[in-house]
Image 1 (cartoon, rainbow, N blue to C red):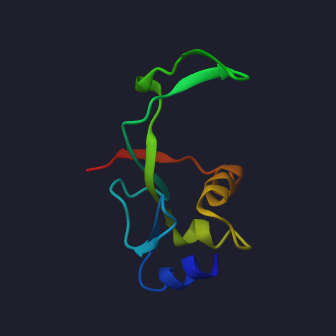
Image 2: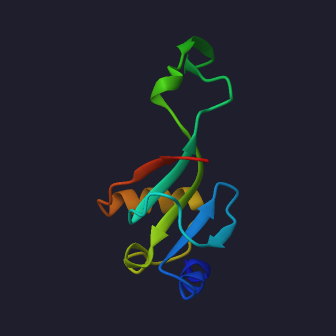
Length: 103
């Protein structure tokens, strides 16, 4: 969290790529919490244990490329987290995410 808050000093929001890289700036959309998404390219299947039971409807899922958080949201969070833990922690705060398709 400290790296995110340090980056925040340069602007009003920070962006975290799915790789975990933190970059300054904001995503399109301008909401307090924005997911930058793209259509999935992987094969997506549902399973029951080890048996494949079907395919996932690609119109219902997105791949997360990055996410952007405002300083106001970051200030409500404490402790170190992975990017994926951070996504959950923001959701647990009751913040609604805006999805914006990647350029």
